Image (cartoon, rainbow, N blue to C red; front, side, top):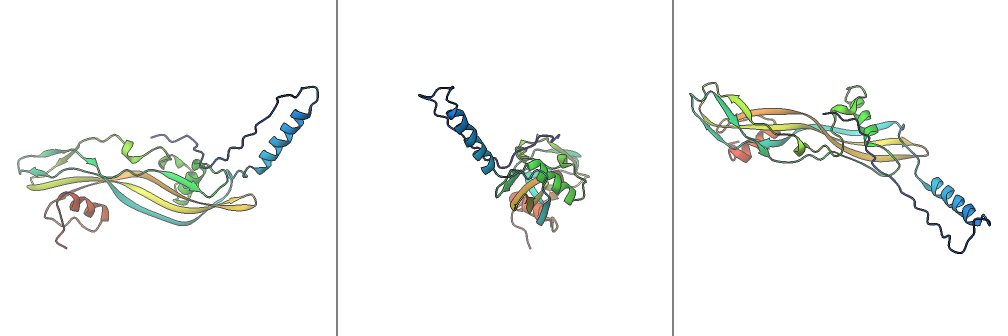
Length: 212
């Protein structure tokens, strides 16, 4: 998917109400007051941090289970078997800050660079690109002559991180949740699924409690 939009994380809106009843343009006083009010509002607005350096205090990556299929009873002669997955959870990308004007794109570009992807943020989901909005397709798996109760699962790679942005005269603190890519797994009920947490979760949801 293409992610070229810039998302504003925090915006402070200042409104100025002008009272003009009973005044004439010739006096010039209402205009002078309006100009002063606008100048005061502009000076009170938080400084832009769009070019501020981002420092990372914690970055955690994990695969999180998002879809799983019902159990399918497979026979030795079935060959390719189609599995239809259903939604387990929705991962919602977000960027939160303590103040200032910092765009999500600026934060995600800095995160991509921190992950050693260069400064291209298009591989990371931005606010509004929820994982549940992905189009789900049936999965076809070659049973390879196996028999038994089989399940397929899908997860996405999630990043949770906290950061500090160097803004003019102060620091702005924030956190980000985003996702990228996906992983798939097929498992058989009654067979230990291994140590990956998201695969073990899929097993518990479909096959039941593990023996260990």
